[in-house]
Image (tube, rainbow, N blue to C red; front, side, top):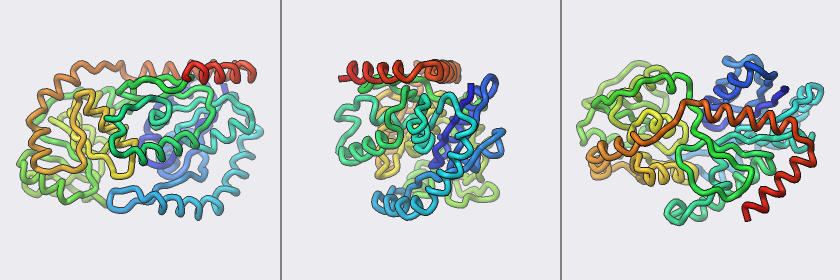
Length: 369
């Protein structure tokens, strides 16, 4: 089967997850990848063929997404970058004629699928916002952020045949043709053996209030993610600022007592899989992160906080045993369920005729009402 696979370039979670899926598909299928931004730079050295395309980006300031700056930024770069990108890319794909398109929140692959009437399968975690039901406690006072996030999510990849959503929590479905599967993890995470040490692993851009609270707590902390990052480990009292290292980060994660991080899905999923309690501080203005953190708290796997104060950190540390007990009940058999589901749905989509696909989408919409 010929598979076109599109990967969103904003954030590394799309890239690391997609590599696992693509590596699995390459065993039996012909797969070509298109990606933008950071995903392209990451995947081009790890996969046989990756073509670069234009992708939208977020404008950030002090850890918060700037909505209108993001719109202006993409309206400025889009008209300049998009036409040449689409023309060159469409020429590459047209002769090859993929039998199915899979997209990890990458809109141009979805647009090609609709234009060419090629079956489309969407694999990501973000469509959780639109395709599942979320109650008032999850949405909270951020209804405006939720409505914007849902509208953007719906517009990015509309009318896919199937939406396969990776998740460690399972709300009620709101739309048909939606399948929830466990998170897709890096192979080294699946292979890791978790043990409980005495340190926290912290992923932070350098929020000073957070660092002050960590210092006051006195617990050993291994800090990653600082802007720029040190070239070598720097020790300041109970804080160790670590250089960027995938191997070092995973080693510190698997042997930690707990995690302090944002609300990014990939790290939360890895922590949950390894049984590590999480104190999650989502980025302001990023509803998807807030949703992840609130569901994490609801599952009993940790806490969601708007900021880390000494009181918040003390509560988290005092409840580590409680969170570990809840995490002990979480079950996931590596990536087997997710990878099998993706391949099965791709094969089925590739073999369905257009009339069958239209009927299935229509029936799914009817059942979801």
